[in-house]
Length: 496
Image: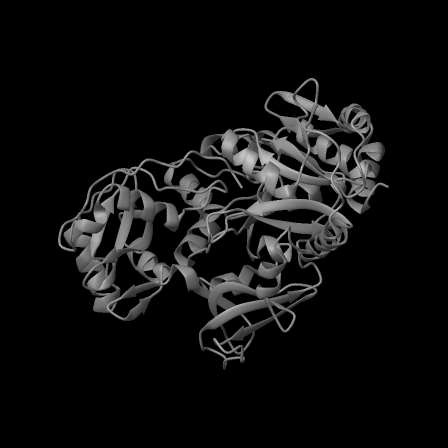
């Protein structure tokens, strides 16, 4: 009953033998050891009678045993539902129930499997399913994105060609594997016989140290991580590093240029995609990245796009509309939510909710999220435009903008500012800076200097969370004239 990814990963570890395949801190795992551990976990699952297409919740936290657990589930035809080990129990229980799981597998635990009863009737949507990745929903409830073995295997093959991936690559993983970005980077390395160096949590100094220590050739980092590395003051002396993949949030032109200069011997790939489309739908690197700063790229293999207005009609080149994607690696659907699945498509294209425009030569630029648009006095403001203007200030490391309710204007623009180490700026100087770069209605009404920005579980800066923190601190009632120097606490990091 073993599925496609089980055959690929199992064969890679069988072929690898005594070669070191995963390094976790000071511990090395050979391919044979990983295969043996997967055998033990599989035996535990078999004792509980795992049914074909049955969803199994797997606790993960970027440990070598997590990948062995994936293989154990897949060999039996089960479906992996990853949950981070540090997620609050209420959050774990919510996903457990939403996925219809009865089994919880922990490769670190003994006994490894915890059961709540007998198998449920199989869900037809889980036929050939490899993973169910839960993402945040607009209602606050998680959405279970079902990705098939066929879709994920095809995406790995396509990425292998586009990214010129070879056997023997040495990849550093700082992204969590509950995040689709971290998942495909890991699986592509492991199924092609590479070495994976894994970190449980992101630390700029540790990333640079291990790239040198293990002669890493590739790594994936979201832009927030890249900013943290640059802000650390450490020199990126990483001659072995051939490729950096970045995605998960928009890469600004100035940040892309700074990264390219700091990692002079490394090619930076800007990659755009969604969990629902299997990720990695558009690519931009090399000369295109320099000539089109802030863009997300051209469609990759098997991907078609269109940019449509509210009526679903394609818009002319250069006009803004919703980015819609058609791909051979599309999700099977949202688990248990057929109405939401149907509403997410238009004429076979997945509706991303991203506002974008395309140049005549086909390069796409994302200008914002439809749900994140700020409506100030009837004017529509893209948060990214405000952020880019603020981040162009020499003292600003990172800016995050959001809208908060206002009885007069509907919403006012609030911006949180993280300054570069040793740099100084005040609200008045930043307002003057934006006055030279933004229309009046786009300038921030309130500026908040923070010690750290709220991030989601993927490491991305989180506008929604920022709004919640500012509102909780009373920012919405302060009025637009007063800067607010509060330091909203960073969200507990449980990567998704």
